[in-house]
Length: 165
Image (cartoon, rainbow, N blue to C red; front, top):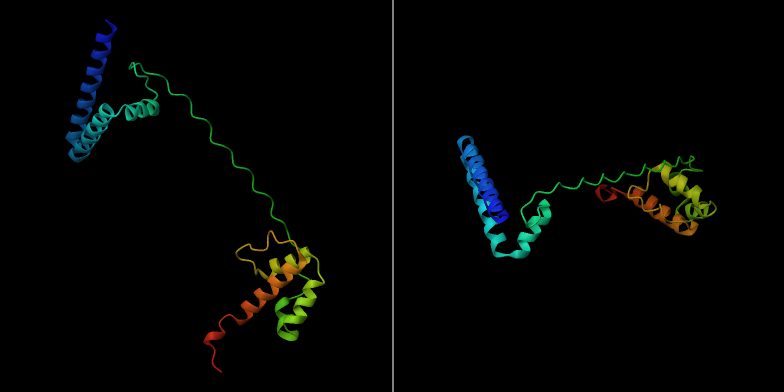
């Protein structure tokens, strides 16, 4: 007897779906036709492929016996960690562009090498030379000093290709 009741429920659900599509067709015929075709394609594929039918059941949490099941409550979205506070940097000890212009590359490298890593990073931050955040993980003074000299050299000569004579 329960098989007959389940069959009757399915028939009612199919009729309700058809009625909803007809109601939609009165206001938006193309949407009604598209939904009808979509439902038909999905139903035919589910009838043909048991794995697809099972995936649909799992997606909508409907057991194979047709009884409806309350969907489990969605897990709350994970909270985002608060952003780390920005490190306020000290002003740089000197202007690397001035040293490069007046004394040259070797003098700039020498002056940078006499500073600690934080001192070089202060200069980099003050001059806004690290737009791609390349120096954040660099810790060695010699690596930071060479990077800074190369960046100063690049920024100083930027645009020279368009200058005459």
